[in-house]
Length: 103
Image (cartoon, rainbow, N blue to C red; front, side):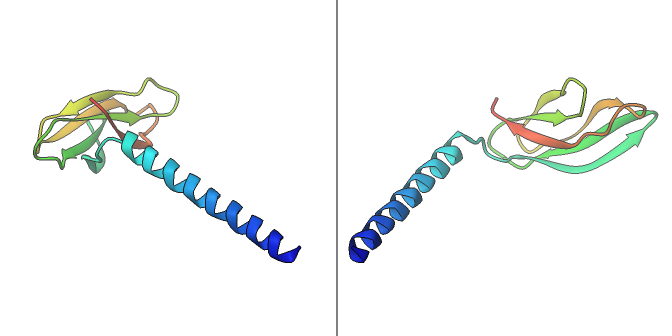
């Protein structure tokens, strides 16, 4: 009986690891390359800016700036470019992060 129970537990453990491996590889296939990199957040003249760089030198990359309780600004960067993007005023909330999105 113990031998049978040990075999069943081993089979369940193996099937769970196979399921997790399949799910993680499928999630990795859905993600776009992480090309847009944040260089710095700063304020200038009452406006909030974020300096972004496209690390992919062969393609245009798209991004979304996540700001709480506001519409998220989005845009694209040409290949290898660095750009200061204005996303709000100093009275509004700061950006939480910048999300890479598929174009």
